[in-house]
Amino acid sequence: MKIVLNGEPRDVAAATLAELLAECGFSGKVATAVNEGFVPAALRAAQQLTEGDRVEVLAPMQGG
Amino acid sequence: MRSFYGTELPNPLMLGTAQYPSPAILEEAFRTSGAGVATVSLRREGAGGAGQTFWQMIQDLGVHILPNTAGCHTVKEAVTTAQMAREVFGTDWIKLELIGHTDSLQPDVFQLVEAARILTDDGFKVFPYTTDDLIVGERLLEAGCEVLMPWGAPIGSGRGLNNEYALRAMRAEFPDTPLVVDAGIGLPSHAAHAMELGYDAVLLNTAVARAGDPVLMAKAMMQAAEAGRLAHEADPIEARDMAEASTPVIGKAFL
Image (cartoon, rainbow over all chains, first blue to last red; front, side, top):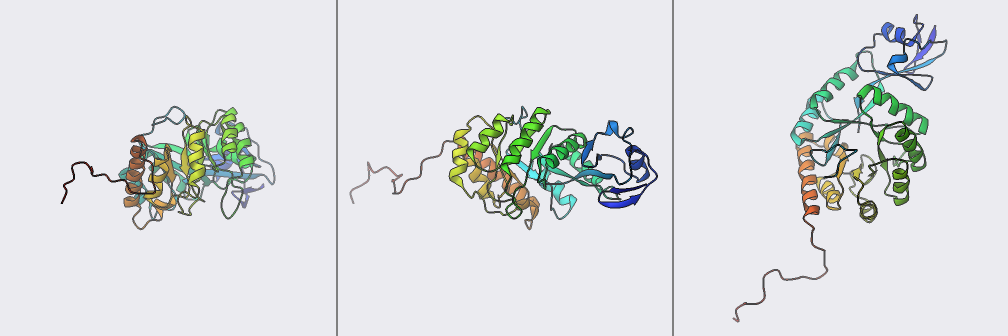
């Protein structure tokens, strides 16, 4: 399935957001959004992915 | 010192975490200055998990974390970013930035008030990055904010307090609200100036991170902010146009 992950086109096997994080090697403190909507960590396993979804995986970063 | 949403801070310096020459220098700047608040952001996680290393270091500093919504231009973007930040950083504090103008990074105060209302209704403790407009300040308080953070000058400009009159008016208008000058501070004298006006803290990043010696500058900013705070508490004299002799005239010898 083709999705867009952090702005980059990706072809993934994952069917849910939780599976996507595992497949792409994300761990630790991250926050997720699908199609510009926040998906809390507790709901990632239930969040089905569909073709063309835009997924954002954000992490702590320096800021002012 | 006033508390920020019930939290007493050890001193009046809030420090950003961006643009330092190295993580080690960032860490040392915090430790040397004793700054009690660190602003942070959320950005796309890279393949190497850079965010996790940063997060570990920030946690080790043992300071209060103030995540921002830097770079957001719409209410929806800012609200979503705040929700994500709350989950990642485990705090309901949010430095709400809603940028309205590309060159000056001036806040879009209309969207700012709207986002502040949504976030406070959702349980966030909002630290709004705002202008020095009194009516906007009132609206933000009505929206549920308990802190206001007017700009001194555009972010990263180092110009100091562009409009002392407006900042002074803001202090007078909101005597019981914790006020922070956020952005524009370039020198310790600017930080002292803000504190002398009766502000409760200063928030700065670039002036320290981009200084030739960030650790030394962080220390200077802290000392200046503390000096300004003490000066305000000491009730300074009014400036006057003409001299007033300080040495007694009575008793002067006739020579």
